[in-house]
Image (cartoon, rainbow, N blue to C red; front, side, top):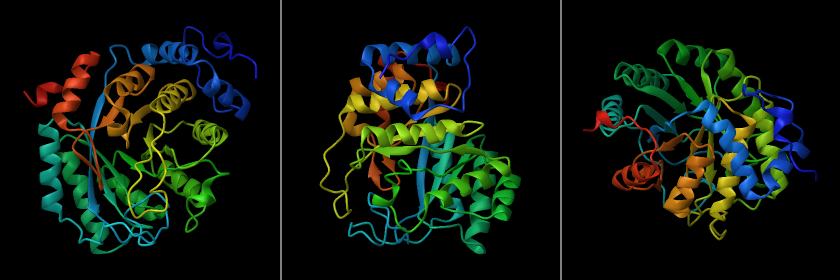
Length: 332
């Protein structure tokens, strides 16, 4: 493949494109790392002077018992992990967690339900109350709860929901090797419902599930073809949990995460690129490289749904050494 020509796509103003070809994305992803980092830096420094990083906290409101068969997920009823179906947290408990997250420095609070799709009735009413409560605390509110209807999306928007997370996980070509209980098209339709309701989109994927480099490029291309781009793009590294179908897979090379973050930043200049699951396996130096390459958000707190995450103290030390700007005054 030919060397990617930065001047073709970037001038003094960052260009937004939605027509990237797979070959172009592959050229970006495969080029020498130093060249990729330099190109990502041109974009990142332009859109994020000062390297500001958003801290987001994630809480599992409904844990376990999910009907989906996602090969990576310990919450799936099709897997044999030690995560059991647990009762939903109540509104007061969730808002207490949100308040604690804000006091620790987070300014975005994300809530997860292990559902195939949102359930109407008291469960949805509780979700709406949580969203309203989180917003009243002055936090951004994000929900991930599977598929939803147009009416449910509208009601979430009315409650003040900032963002809805619905990941594509992997490429269209590799998707059926990971999930069979929901189609790729259904995921895309869910994203459209979210967009139509006026809620911002949080949508990304996972690497390290046995996919090829072409699959990674294809995932990024699908994300970058959205117009507008997803406002938030979480990049996850597989955490291989015992009892799941992918439990024996090795950890990804940390530099593969750096490449994904850098390429995502170039393709989607104004999106918030979130360094998400798998940070513990990366190590501090690789995480700092990801921040330099274009990541401008991390999930903050010692648990991500059901898997572990670096401690708050470790994250504060890392971000301080990296010299990025965060809203520490909330904690001091």
